[in-house]
Length: 457
Image (cartoon, rainbow, N blue to C red; front, side, top):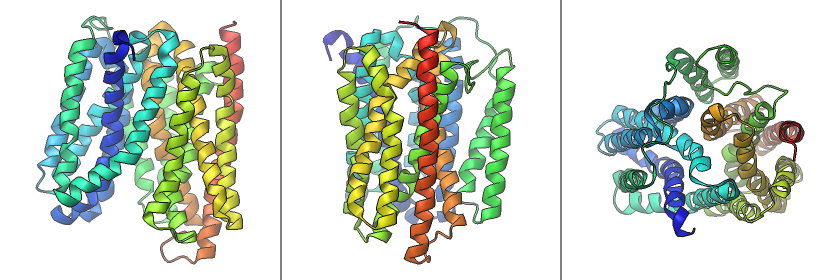
């Protein structure tokens, strides 16, 4: 927060805030927009298109940065985001909202990825954990105030006001980018051709995952998820052998710290997606809590994430932070196990420590793990690695929501399901989340070992 770095900190946090607050604004105000514009059947597409194009934007951001420079790419992406927001705000039909959401996703996917990529360029290594701690505060603020602000604007003014509020924030971000990002930051070099075919295939795979959540049956859901797995594995296979890769060369390999670490980045949000999708619903239908109380318990995770991230960011010893990082997936596993115990025993008080441990698991590991991924990358691949961090986080939540939705449907989950059936379904969902988190624990330990071998202290 010293003058030398203050504007850079604000700029990168604002770039993350555009993503975080916009999600809460839109999800809160969109149902009211549907009531006015019609097109309820298209509601899920407003989220699906945003997610798919945000991931595509994240994947292509490193190439754009190399081709046009960080400054020009950020300005163009922010302009696309503003154009999408204006289109969605002024929409007279749901199809225009969808077009706006597509542009928002494409722009914000690039912005979020480059805000990660610029961290090691704008800050010395010792301050990187503090930047991630600051971004954790942004997410916590968005989790609390986002729905509140959007709800107030929608109720007292219009859903359009909730959509519009992102525009002045984007305008400030553009001004700050002009002020702090030098023209010479990684631009003007010879960039490889953009692999449109692989990007479209990756987008199609994520789209299939998203559509599986609304497929309306176990068989089509399973078919879409299986098809998505084939498409995404094929894309990774082809990208690894391409002369112009989108992913780092070591991505998802088992013998490099970068490869196993990126698996951890994917699997941690994937396992936590069980809570993101089903926790509030479970609290309301198994324990009959009201929306406010259920939302408050759900928000404990965000509070814990922020507080623990700030605490870890204050540690000066990188070696100590790396050791503490290994406890992150462990705490995530224990927290999910507490939720399973709460559901199985009908003892709701287990939820509170469970949520606190889940948040702490992310808080103490996410920033350090992200920095480690940058440190073990080669100079030529650091941009691609940085861009993968928010992209994989989004992909993890999308895959987790689809997989756990399928598991719940197989167990008979539904609005008309009796309480006992719902309880069994939630036990399977959160139990599956625990299994995924255990795999993240194993891979985190291997990542630490490989990193020590790659960068001996």
